[in-house]
Image: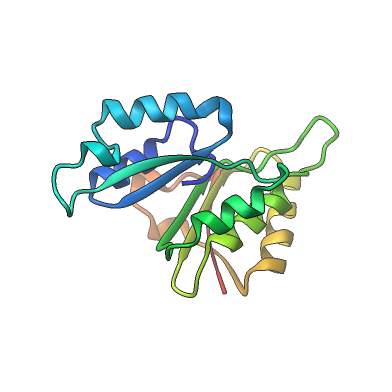
Length: 165
């Protein structure tokens, strides 16, 4: 999970049996680590070889050396990359971190990885930059049709994309 905030999505996936790496910037890692431990999902809290767990890692796309972190995270095959609300407009009206975010997604993806990215439509500029950068890095950028999602997830102002080669 990229840009996880409190790590809810990653925690739920670990509860369902997945082996998850939850990432965010350094100032959020303490919260994520606490949430992982409170939910008994740390690797040292596993209840059997097949139970899911969550690890926590710092990843700040755009920060010096982030490409090395991405390569390290992708050393083992990655089945899924998930991210929500990771693209923003800054005070100058641009989205400078979005190209780095897309490079991060692409760097984590292997031939069979599924990459799902959602965001709230706060700005047409965010969507434009996201789609432009994603189209440069990935062979396919497909909006998941809202009608194909569960009813509670069919929200007009939130879009979900699948990125793949």
